[in-house]
Length: 423
Image 1 (spheres, one colour):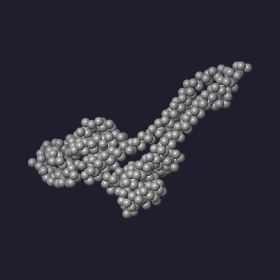
Image 2 (spheres, rainbow, N blue to C red):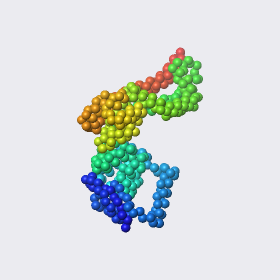
Image 3 (cartoon, rainbow, N blue to C red):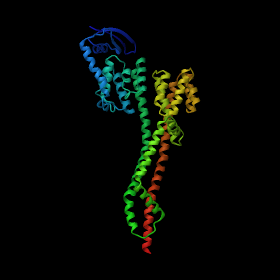
Image 4 (cartoon, rainbow, N blue to C red):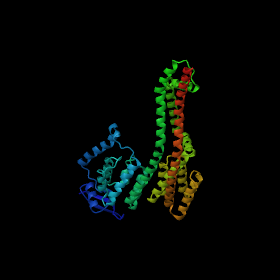
């Protein structure tokens, strides 16, 4: 009977190694789970070369080649939302906390309702783990679902023997970011709705109502007011040269996207976002909260500081902040503290620099970053509220001026006609 060398962890986190006999790897994994061990690696010490083994290898090759087909591409999972990832992570943590072995917990995950993450994902993870791979390595094979942040935190949890605690922290991390995204979305819903309604009213009036008034005005020898003449000219321009307007808008959009695709264009756009009035403060608070929350979560779960900075750099969407984090990572590699390069970049606020320096002096950088994240998230909530309160009246005023101009133009023409008839 074949022999398998294994490396596993006890529930206490202790690593044990040994050799067991079994008909195949699946049976050995089941045997280890019955002993209360969490397999980390299982390798055959004697590789049986049989016709059956060779015949089973061919389908695996076909399965690796098949995903390149168009049908399989359509079935690839989409990137889940943060709340969906938080739910999946919390469910897995609950199952492991209840004492389930990892493979059994992943099998149960295929039957649980995890919106946004297909059951096939948990099924593939279970298969990889049963073949002797760690959970983090299995997740690394599905980058569309699990980011580098997720994989590295799971790997740190496996190495420290605190996988359940790490999963719970990650679930909380994703839920916090989902709440921030929800605040952004809700802050823009009302202004977008007002703008959409205003554009719809103006379009309906210019394309349907105004032509009816024009036919009535054309039969009367009355000099129309300048507002009405301007509106008529505008209506003729839109109706006769609408294709030119569409062409100009499409051209502007293409030029903007090409400019945004360049390195210099992306830097200038990101610079404008940071310095824009009102909106820039919201962007800065969001970036600083993301930086502090992500880095603190990684460091709290045992991820090395250089790896944590690299992952945080990938999470930040702003090019200028990315470059500042990259320079900070190089300085930390040279043995410098984290606070010094952050201060030298002149992009991070003094409060962050001071608290990170205090955290380095007290040996609690993750705690300092966590406090910073809480502070910036609270300030972000207030800044979003202020921005919304400023945008709403501005949008209402703009729409009211546009609609009022249309109505006043028509009413002034009707008054002119009425006055001419009365004479």
